[in-house]
Amino acid sequence: MWGWTDPETGREYAIIGRLDGTAFVDLSDPYNPVYLGELPKTALSPGSVWRDMKVYRNHVYIVADGAASHGMQVFDLTQLRHVENAPVTFEETAHYDKIHSAHNIVINEETGYAYVVGASAGGETCGGGLHMINLEQPDQPTFAGCFADPETGRSGTGYSHDAMCIVYHGPDRQYQGREICFGANETALSIADVTDKANPEALSSAAYPNVGYAHQGWITEDHKYFFLGDELDEMNGSYDRTRTLVWDVSDLDDPILATEFIGTTGAIDHNMYIKGNTLYQSNYVAGMRVIDISDPENPRETGYFDTVPYGDNSASFNGSWSNYPYFASGTIVVTSGREGVFFLKNKEQPVP
Image (cartoon, rainbow, N blue to C red):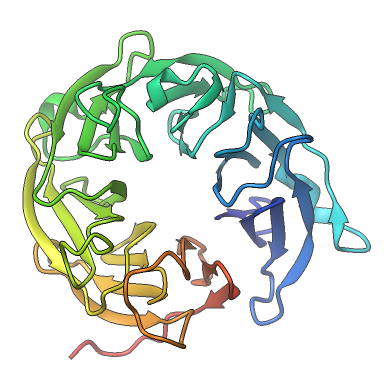
């Protein structure tokens, strides 16, 4: 899932992946959300539980994994401004067919490039690494190049399960102002300079103890630390509580594992996002966990919302996959597979 704020009206919208397409919800009044309608999956593609999307210049870009020739859907979000007789069924604005199935999509809004990752069937897979797309004309995306680090990934092709790409403003002076991508590449953290799309460069990769599956991560706003989740280390019995790896990336050529943050339950960590000094981490059956990272090497949980309040919080693949904490209103959207979508607000309390 992801979110969009209309720059003209200030209205906030949740964009939610489903098995059969993408749903749009108006959060003008988050206590009374309005389901506006859906964009169905690409015709003839099978349903997929893996559907991911990101937003750039009032357009959302949607991919799906295990979905045959789904490709990338492009949808003009300004259509949500004047929806009559909701819910309605929308049509895609454009379609990008240079990929078929893909696990995820990343967008760097500063540069206007999208990075499809985990492409695995048809089209230009780029080894499952970064399939780079120029979004200069948002409704006419064009292929820009490939990057993959074959030193990472289970199959030795540089497969990236998820990534984050930024214009780097951290302490490593050598790369300030460069476009840097951090990849969760199954077996390791991968760091690459993709400023020159024709000649992207692998800067470093870093494995860590008891690798299960390097899944997804997010960088702190000062670009000094990268928080990485491993999706299988709890499931395979390596840890009895949720583990999050905290990397010191002050030197992009030599990332250092600064600490391992051990959570309060045995649930599996999934997608996590950072806003200010807070990490919002979806933890499957333990719901969304709120973690204070004002001291990145000593994180601590300060709150949670359990989307699966029944049963225990042992490692399993049910519950919360993702969240979106970036709305200016403070509304936080949390998805949970069997339970639906939750709209939350932080209840500010003094931290003891």
